[in-house]
Image 1 (cartoon, rainbow, N blue to C red):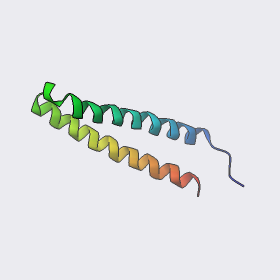
Image 2: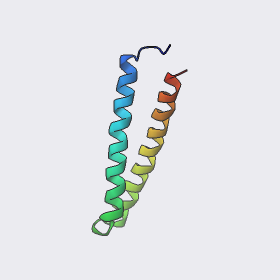
Image 3: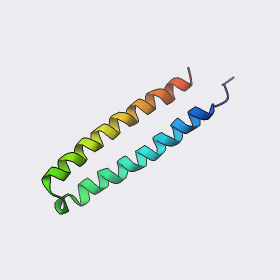
Length: 68
């Protein structure tokens, strides 16, 4: 039998869903609008996207650990 979900686990699930939506939006922006933004800003946005993806991976690992 599985354990009931804790309040903090719900917050982590919601945080990951929100973050993944932001990752999708930023990825789309970088693909479609990159010509409208100067190179320095594109570089910063690329770093931001990589860090967001890493953070999402950490949240994913935490979510997977909930089942343990």
